[in-house]
Picture: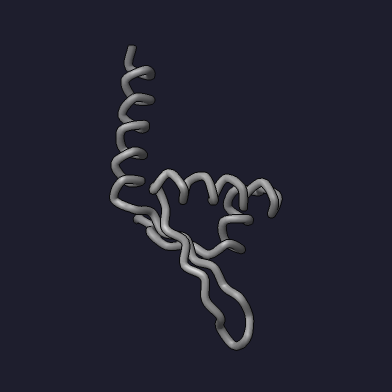
Length: 73
């Protein structure tokens, strides 16, 4: 199963992070081109969705491969 889009509330629950810390980390990931941020309104409430970019997918795959190689040493 892959999840390519997630909202801020779900990410807070998944990461068990504070709003401020998560917000800063997501901003850094966006500035690096690893995620995209989409802000919009739904029934007059502000919503924010985050999705991984192709660059982000590749970076994660490369990172995971490095972890696997360290485990196998």
